[in-house]
Image: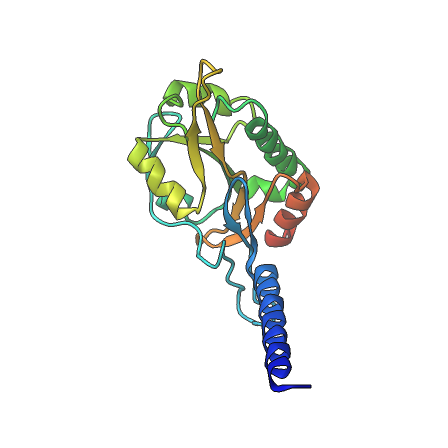
Length: 219
């Protein structure tokens, strides 16, 4: 084998190894969906302390100030000390949002009585249309204690950033009303604001209910 052929063979091997490393990185670090940024839930199973869980390698949650469907100021401090299930969507959503909120409701029903300690929260991504009155009527369709949160565009942008939620207004010339393109995930948060689990459209109520029972031991 001549020198040029040896060099070419070495370069091919290097390229193959690089491609294999890229595939491995994608498998470990999550993937990008058509709905938004890469999503990943990480947990250090070998750590004896409480696992840290993140989305796309970044912690989830943080300070925010919104208004609830009763007209009261509602901040991240209102979530402290209790477990929460949080979903981001909009009331004009034709299918995905009501389906996911129904899933949340079904999971809470299945997980009773552990779910009695959970506050279900719906945060709008469409502040232009989702006013207090609209939110109040909407959350009442799902669960008595569900809290609907809305705010100014700046306030919504801040909470979307904190929870790594993708949302974008879409205006189709064929439609009289705009719609919203957004990521669809149910967040299960702990009393200290830590992420316990994240559930997409393929998750089932039973899976969420099982996680609730595991996280909230009953006497």
